[in-house]
Structure formats: structure tokens, C-alpha cells
Amino acid sequence: MQDVEVTAIGSARPGKDALRIVWAELRRPVVPAIAVFAAVLAWALLGDAERWDGLWMATVLVHYNNLGLLWPLVLGAGAWLGRRYRSGRTTELVESTPRTGAGRATLVAVLLAGLLATGWVLSLLDGAARAVLAESYRPASWYWPVLVGAVGVAAAGVLGLGLGRLMPSRLTAPLLALGGLVMIIGPQVLWEETGSRALLLIPGYLGSTDEYSTVGWRTVVGQAIWFVALAATGWALLVAGARRAGLLAVLPAVLGLAVALATLPPADRVAPHHPHAAELVCADGEPRVCVTRLYEPILPQLVDPARRALTTLGRLPAPPTAVIQETAGYGSFVEQRHDTVHLSLTVAGDGTISTGAGSIEEDILDGAGTWKCGAADDDTETWERIDAARTVAGLWLRDADVPPEILRGPVRGLVDRALTSLRALPATAQVARVAAMRDAALACRPDLYDILTNP
Image (cartoon, rainbow, N blue to C red; front, side, top):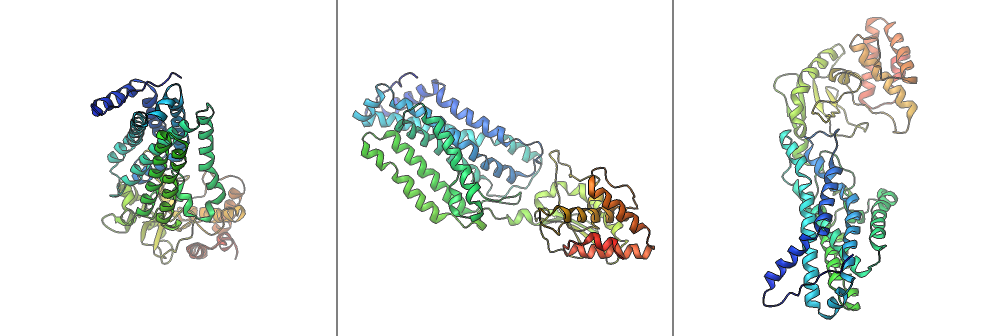
């Protein structure tokens, strides 16, 4: 690597000399190339053909989570660039004329930070344009994670610059990138269950989030303080001439760590649900069909099949009279109402409602219009029996005899036996069995199959 040309920043023409330095750095491909690389990688990581463009806040949070993958690479790239400030005559210049060396180093740090932050923001524009076209709901505070991410990626570059100047070995950059990756992944693997707020110091980490999540103000402020402190330490290492000054450079990081930990919230308040995103929006007319405001653009797709399903469920005593989108996670316990179908809604990347093996109506009738729950995630045998019972109830309601092709193995056999047994009963007994199974499913009981098959 060639020596860095050093242009003195004289007191007579500080502005002109500063512009000349910035122009000289821009003419070299190194600093712009690092920023372009980071922006392209952030944009590529954000792409997901399966994610609906209408989930704008989810896109923003995925973008922010990707900072965890990008941060170590930018740290290493910054360190590789920082080596140049310990090469050739630059070292002697920085140590003997700190005003000149520090001024140039500061300009390079500001330039790198600005380009990285700009690239980070621009990498989201594609997703923003698609979200606007999808007419998605965008909470007023959506931009805060974007800005904090911009500060974070800029801090990685500046910290890398400082560490690269402090340790000008050819191994510094790759070791920092590898070490940064370990420091980001390791604590999440080892200590995520503890819920410690110290985990929020990890770039890109927000804990568990979903499409309704937003980022709390304490999370935003605490992480921003931490990133600014790391950038300040990187700048101090970059411009430090004497060894004592280098030792003092860690003070911003130490102070930032203390202030950030005091500011960051408990784990349950890191990314709360946005109340307006989860509020219900209902279609005109009856029966009542509602989705959350976040999913309002797809409500027209749901109305007709949902109302047909409610009509079919009218075969049962005390049938449900409304279909309401549920915000709880799939498979989790839900306090179900007897008069309501609590619907788990998934939208494909093309903006259509994603169903299982059949139509929207069939998905609603699965389990006689109940929420799927009743067993632990790893209890495969119980889930097979629950799935079989729910499938049988849906087939019976639709007067169908052929299970979905997606069913294989033990579940297929359970469905065939239960459906044959149910069809052999008198009509009133069939209704009673399915109604009893529905009542058990509303309580998230695991014995749905036994209720359908036992006399």
C-alpha cells in the first residue's frame, strides 16, 4: 500500500485545504469503495421474496438486525484503511505535528462515517418504495432504527480506523472482522435466555420482534449513546500521538458503556407492539370480519371466504359469528372467544393471503374455526393427533372425504380412521362430536382426537 499523501492544514486557508483533502480521498477508490460495499451488502441482505412489502416496520427491523452481520465487516475494512496512517512518513508527521496529522485523520474519519451512514440509509430506499406502493401502515417512529443503524455502521468504520492505526499489522483487519463476528454471535447464543440489557449493546440486536413491533425510545437512545462512544474512541485512537493519549482514548467507550447500560430498558420493553398497528379494522356489513390495521390492504381478499366459512360453521350449535385476525404467535396459547374465529394470517410476497393445503375458507374451517394450540413445540406425537382431529373437523364441515395431499405418514392414517368412524355415526351424533371437539380446541386441550373417536 502506498504512503498516504499528507496535506498540511494551515491556519490561512483551513476551508480550502480541508476540501482539497476530502477531494483527494474521494479520488482514491478506497473510502468510497468501503461505503459502496457496505451499502450494497445491506441492500442484498434485506431482500426477501417471501416477505410482503406491506410489512414496512418488519422490513425496517430486518434492516437493523442485518447490522449485526455488516458491523464486523465494516470494522475490518476500517482497520485495513487505518493501517495507512501508520505507514511511511505519516506516523512521524502525526506524532510530531499533531495539528496537521489529526486534522487530516479527522477529515478521513468524518468522510468515511458520512459515506457509510448515507449508504446505510440509501440501502433501504428500495424497500421504502415498495412499501409505499403496497399502501402499508407506517408508524410515525419508523425512522429511528434507521438512524441508529446509520450511527452504528459509521461507528464501526471509525473504530476500525483507530484500531488499524493502533495495530498496523496485516492481520489486524481480518482478526477484527472475525473477532467482531464472534462478539456479536457468541453472547446471543450463550446468554440470550438471561434477558440481560447488556445484550442490547450488540449491534443490530433487539431481541424477539414481529411485524407489530416498534423500538422503544430508551432502546434508541441507549444504543445511539453506545455507538457514538465507540466512534469517539475510534477517532481518539486515530489522532492520538503519544502513548498516554492512546490510553485515554478508551475513556469515551467506558463512559458510553456506563451511560448506555443505565439508559437501556429491560428485555420486555425493548421492542413493544405499536398500539395503532395492532388495532382492528373491520369490513362493512355482517358477519363481522376484521384484520389489524397493518394488514388492512388485504382485508378485501379475506371478507368473502371468511363469511362463507362462518355460514358453514352454522351447522354447529352456538357457532362463531365473526372472524378476527389474531396477533399472537402461531401455536401459542390464545384466550379464545366462543363466538369468534381467531385467525392467524400470513401474507405471501406477492400480497396474497398464504394458506396451507387449500383455500382461505378451508384454513378457517380447519379445527372447526379454532386456534391451533394444545401441545409443546417438541411434542410431535400429540401434534400429530391434534392435526388429524383438526383436519377431520374441516373435512366433515365441507362434506369432503379426501384429506389434503400435504398430509403424509401417521397423520394421514389417523385422519382416515377418524373420518370413517365419524361418518358411521348418526347425523346428530356427528354434530355433537364435532361440537365437543370444537369446545375442547377453544380451551387448547390436547385430546381433540380422542373426543372425535371415542364413544
